[in-house]
Image (cartoon, rainbow, N blue to C red; front, side, top):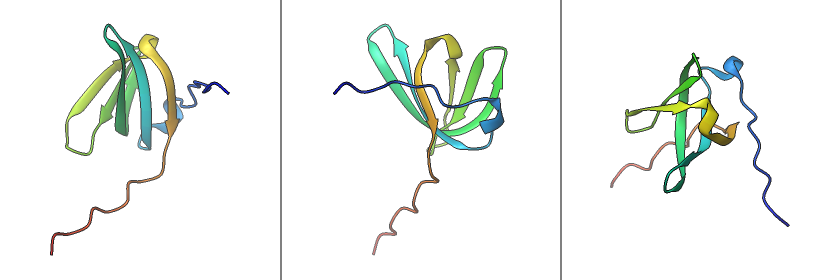
Length: 76
């Protein structure tokens, strides 16, 4: 059975944590983070490490809302 690639996000999901897969020249690239903006065909996703990823919506092949990340365990 083949995987189904679906874009299941809209501008209504701004503020939600999402996962994306987009086409790049080397193949595909994924980004997980909070959708901060979606304007003029560009999504802005803030990753956990604080970096901001800008994604042209024309390159998206899959995207969906995902649960908030669980807290990282603290070192003992």
